[in-house]
Image (cartoon, rainbow over all chains, first blue to last red; front, top):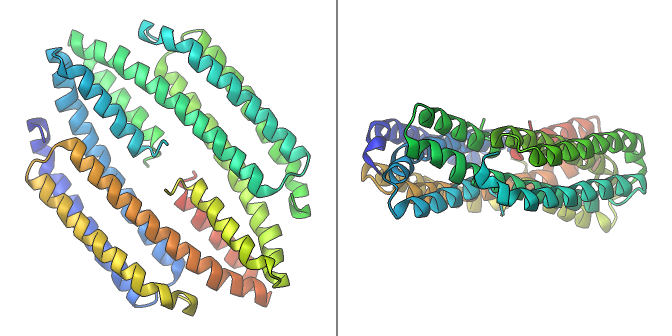
Length: 95
Length: 95
Length: 95
Length: 95
């Protein structure tokens, strides 16, 4: 990750640790025959947390890497924008 | 829309006309008591078409407006990036 | 659509007419070079309206057609449940 | 979870263990300053895996719990269908 992201890396790492704990909690729910709807609610919570991670990474990427390449106006700029749009498309699950 | 988009405007307009026709087709399906699953399939087709429009508009915006503001490195750059991320977030339905 | 849906058909038709008007509004925005972010906001509004239509149709289908087949416990029940899950999967854009 | 799900519980548990491993892999990527786009790709993979878990749980729920309540035609049937539609709505991120 580019340096602009350094500052956020710790926060993102901590979010991911929390998500890891939530996934372990889900395993316990399945093992203990929890009610399906409660499991689905918890899966949705993990998905929301993961989206937040994705938005944070994307945000750091756009402000650091992409903006840097565009400002430098080098050959890389077009490539970075293509890459960015591909990531956004995947993120939004556009077919 | 910024000039970079001019070229795409005609194509986007045409996509939207096709979508308008699909929505009218959906009204007919509902009026004629079509099978629910067939209606849902058609709704999904319209949603895919609309996403394609959104991706095209976003793409033109990123390459035109955002890249322009970043390259000019004026006060606008940060604002454009905030606006872009808000649009991406909304597009990906991130809460 | 099964009879359970009849009651909702008028409401769904009206929602679709409103959506048709929104799509025409989008064409005008594109023709008049509206700001990209405003177009994206309007596309998102149409998508939300379409999702509401899908939820209404799915709801009528589950309560009418699917519940009917399950209650009758005929050969159709399993098939209807398969079809329902396929529709839900498509609706949630699960790959 | 109702008994119909028992059979799937082991498979779902295993999927969740794999997801836990993927989330730990993401932490390492962040710690090692991996390229943002690679991180986003990996986040998308975890999201797809989680959706698959949600679909499996929903599927078991519809075929077991919901179909059971509808077949028994007790007071519970309507309540189960409401609950199901709420879960589908949340799953599809419909506002």
